[in-house]
Image 1 (cartoon, helix red, strand yellow):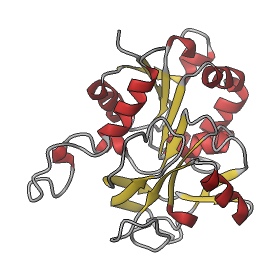
Image 2 (tube, rainbow, N blue to C red; image 1 turned 120 degrees about the horizontal axis):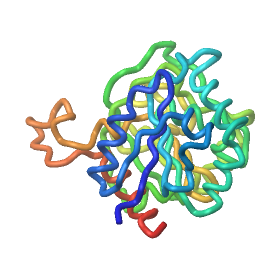
Image 3 (cartoon, rainbow, N blue to C red; image 1 turned 180 degrees about the horizontal axis):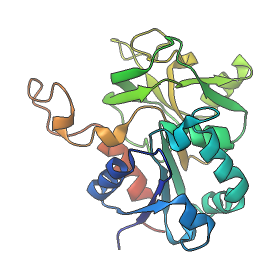
Length: 254
């Protein structure tokens, strides 16, 4: 049987269909489920092997990007979400979903962090290059080459309360993706780094490696013709699909 994946829906989320399509292409069985159905008990998250919190502008980003949906997760589903991960299941948050997971405390899980306004003070909507980093994330296994994926965010700069906490995350293998320069090195320099995150951080995992959040949109880079240079470069695949395949492969035993 294909692993069942719950793609979370809420007011303002707009990449749920893209995420579901990526799951299908990766070999999973997606269900698009509104958070209200989980809260009222008509749908159980424990019927699924993975939860995806997609991108968009949940609840209009009132009070800050992802904050209100994060409140839902913390105060209405907090215990269930913790049990979900403890059972060996996985969670993926993309862009606004990353903001939700960070502001709910599910990421990074061992230190306090946030995502704040881009250093450019602009909404950045374009393609970037990122590189999976050596670490514990189940989603990045065997991703050795740089990938190109789009970003679309105004609050993507990953910050912690102290610089030492960033190196702590790095040492623990929880920095999952970094923005890279023309030499394939992690960079803090604009425009290769669209938001100014220290150490070039584009995505982080929790200590278990089963929760991942990232600002770029791998679900919008799953087929070659989504890339603006696909004909000139004769691309045969979308770079982002590997991330979903890794996640589906991991949860296929659940």
